[in-house]
Length: 295
Image (cartoon, rainbow, N blue to C red):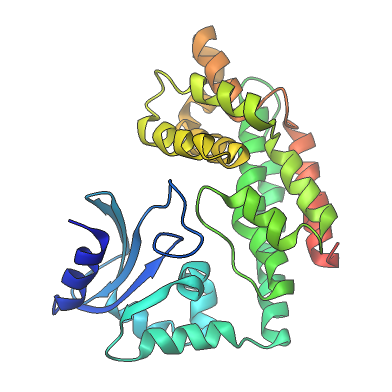
């Protein structure tokens, strides 16, 4: 089933009360790795779900959230704001989806500043927790993974509030943050990049080879598409974050892993190119200050 046909089918489902398309697929910014993505709000759904249907990603939400997220104070705590703000409405009989988008597009400077403060405070708490990770074994890698997560999930979106912009969520993320924020906030983007230890085409090739035997089949497929299109750092970013997410137990059991498995995980996480342990947390703290000061 084509994405267009799926969109029509979703719009015709009586349980579905809103449909929107997200990402670059079908736009002027589409590329070979663009993944068709739909957001739906459905009656009878108890919690948010992500699923794949014939190569199309579905982000499904309960209808009650469509009603609730019209309130900015609730939305900023619960909603996937970037997805909502940048998606294209396909079906919205209640008008609630459009209302949410207009709220996001027209936030005042004071509202954006308050949201930025919320994000930076959350980041500070998370970095304090990461700082408690002890050295030895895989713990320096856990600290690095946590510092990256804080930077990507909290500090980069906080930086973008200064531009009233929303984070790219596709594999081309590093290329997007350079284009969107690099000229205005060079220090923040510099520190963000240092956390990931990018190394261009050569590093992307090494990371792709290291995925073998680690169960990263879908991640390798997507990263390879980015590599073939020239998005080398995008491929590396995806593999670094997905490795940390899917193999956190391995990092906790580092001393018990075989040397071959440690070598592969080390390449994927960028141990020779990235700060580890307290150094990673310290770099994230510098990024936090750059975001607060708009540097």
